Image 1 (cartoon, helix red, strand yellow):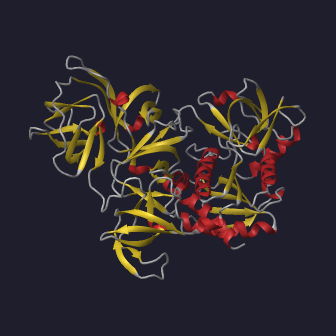
Image 2 (cartoon, rainbow, N blue to C red):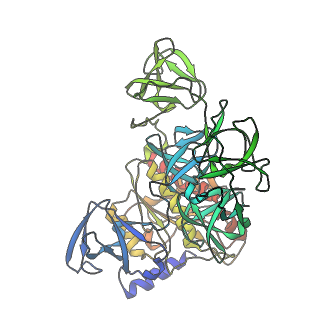
Image 3 (cartoon, rainbow, N blue to C red):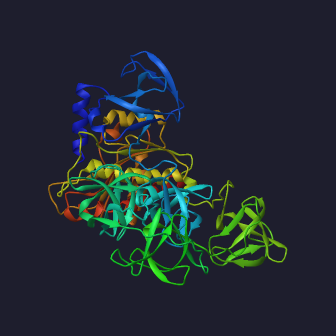
Length: 593
């Protein structure tokens, strides 16, 4: 409940200023990295401003956190020395198990997967992936994955990608006289979260779809360790079926074969892959393929691919040992060394000049590709068949290489350059409210905050989080962060609780007159996007609002004391909708200023 915030804050302030009680021991499961979030930051000999300065660090530099005390963290510096910095001037990232190395690769599982400038359907499409296309994994939140593809960074929906299984993790080297034993399981949930730790507080680093097969490397109580994106990760055992050890004895490999026609092509990733007469491990082995062999895929059924061997015999291989690609040429292959412009929408107009006032000289469809001749403003001049040229709007195409993306102004234009402090309420030993089924408010607050931050960052806002992990930050420190950053808006995220389990809905609280517009706009967008009962925007005497000089609001995004709302707010769909509500609310607020 919200009144707990004030009580806790006053209790701590009577004892100590800027107090934090997070224990270092709670961070041993994953190394925590501090990213310096201010141009120049003083490193001090002890946890306080009264200690002498021992060094300076610069914005963007990263150091391992080795201790905590109150609102200060102790860093392991690159010089071998250690020192203390203020926690509100850094960002924290968990690094131990996150698959963010250069070898982490994801694969599109569908054709025409939209590649967007931000994590949401409101963000501009900047490209597309076909089934089997590979991209570098950068990060992920509840529903979206950030990738690097064709020289650009952007976001795709997590449900339409999978981690690439490397040969070293999916199949050991074997000969005709040896056998390979592996422990596998099959995902039973429609979408299963993959986490960096074996608990529900672990950060979600990706997702697996129903019927996906995973290689199991370890088990710990109710959690299973798997290989994901080239690194270890954890999934809940309740959603994995058919766990067993299987033994495959590969036969002598046959000669490599090439695809006989255009369509889906699979490249073998295992060192040796058995070809069977039916789509299951019980099928009879009728041949074998080597790593790197290409096969033409006739059809796919339950994660098995029906292929044709070089001698004309048809057979089946496990799809999870194939890197599936498309072998369909584009409408026009770009000239060597020149940038390719790829059309994103059917019926795109190609014009005689670089504006919408010029006449239409041709139309192109999604996937058509042309060689770029030049860029004029937000338009690309392209080569057309018959030695002709035309112009296409930059926001209707994707461009490979280092060419800057042309974005058509949307709601993001109102957020660009704004300094916004996102404050996930509670944390550490302060759980906040606890739902009827045991949901911790502090965990929900952080989940929502991270999704909002991803959307705001993609829009060019300067975003600061008061906490990015499960640690306690005093109310006074949260306000100090707002003042230090000179925030254009401060948004404190909470979920509500009350003794009456029938109470439900969302509420936006303000304290000062300058806060009314922010609270009103956010409340309107939250109700619109979540469909929850409108409890209106109302005045609330909370410290993070009362002591805050900048426009500020405290949001209560649903009652976890209501069984139905507790279940709803925990779903990925709601988290997407509520983060959209906050994102759009902030955009509308700044648009009206």
